[in-house]
Length: 388
Image 1 (cartoon, rainbow, N blue to C red):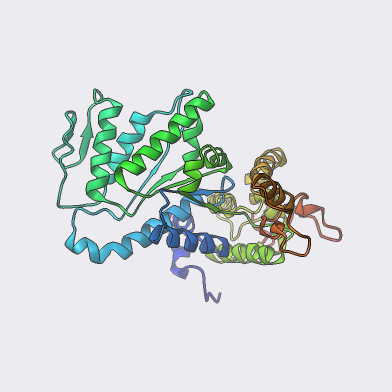
Image 2 (cartoon, rainbow, N blue to C red):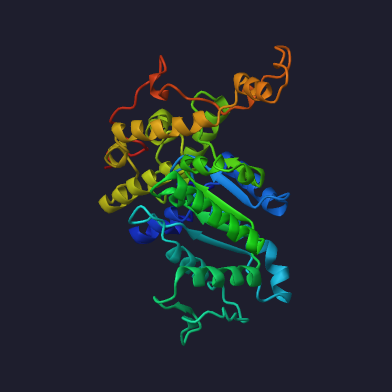
């Protein structure tokens, strides 16, 4: 078998666990990810007075992959500075944990942030000056249960000022909004804003479209924030379709199998069950690959995929959430005229630019409903017709 791209051929002789790990650890640098990553890195380099960056999109679009890529790049760029400033941490990244009750656990959040700041192997250690925060015999930070949230907050402020990271990433940031009322939501926002102001550290919140609630909660925050929309691929956009097919081809070549599966020919089926989200696609293919390897199959078949696909009900439910988020971001000429009227300006003349061209594509119909297109059916994806 000729292999020009994909994976080392000797990997086929390795155990199934290693072959699966190889694919699982691979991330495709597809156009949408690269586009958003470039915007994010430019904004971090020059926030222009912003305290917050909001990165939002569908669940499963690849926001965590985006964050990890940015963290790696920022660390590489900071290497020369680290030679002279051993206390500096280029970037900190944590995940906001969903609360068990209707109140966000700030104590847990501060503790996780402090631990994350200590992850790099830095010779120069920092005394937080808070009773109950110490180091164990291995030099790792230890936070006693008796330490209250305000004390942890002060310790985090001191640590951020001392370590001065370029950006503080918070993944799954929509969990900040899991509170009992709108009043409490404003409190959450004020707490984050205060932390950013006191430390002067740029915060980047990544999450689902639920983050849009924060986006317009405060005029002051809107003025001091930058929005980045991490969009899914759209089936009614030719460039998006070609990009999605390219992702499928890349994933098929990266699967350590004797015969690469033909995923591209069934792109509509993959789009239907992923809604154009590459993160969902990657997770689905990983589970299907695990089943194929467990069976000793030469390739991944449609049977493997169907067993691991999202159900139609799940896809419909997810699509409703995505559409609601996308619709909130639409900017039409009517919206612009409403703003102009509120400002005392005349209505935009018809011959002038229509702001609807800036709106994101709107997908109202399923890609599987196109006339003349073959619907996916149970057959083998790959060369080996007997696999699976």
